[in-house]
Length: 207
Image (cartoon, rainbow, N blue to C red; front, side):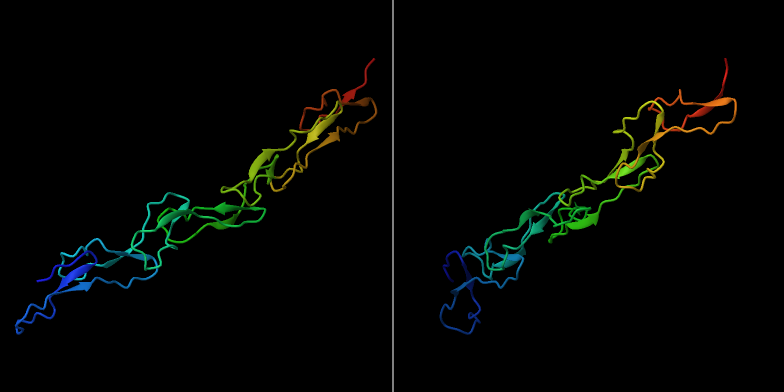
């Protein structure tokens, strides 16, 4: 027999059956755990007959954008010190912090820098102002060209330079034109400044 306290187990290994004395003894529970684990002592309360210490992986229930951080789990601790840590990355202008690989189940920081991108069409430009390296989503957006133009009568808004690939609004106010022959005059009455095409035309003179 053996009456043991917490942290010990009843060790009957010396009780071979050949002895003439009670050789039951109390032996300290032990476990050699590695980084990322902790020593679970719950099954070593003095009543067991075997070493109750076990190594358990540290854990945490994390959400998207986080990972299970085991940095505090050195292998010598006696409690679960796994924690949720937000994924991160240090990105430069033109990139965003991509957290798509951080599902909450990983055990390392998988935040990465991904280049911003946009598929813009004719008449638009790529607005890069919201892609400064600190955001966590693609900050490039397609913006309409010409919204800041104030064209006057006799002009039109030329959006042709806005092919969808420029990173600035390169539209401009351009004077309407017309190449007329004898008996005609250059008529710019339809060029109000609000149109996006050259509406200059030749109109026959009359009296």
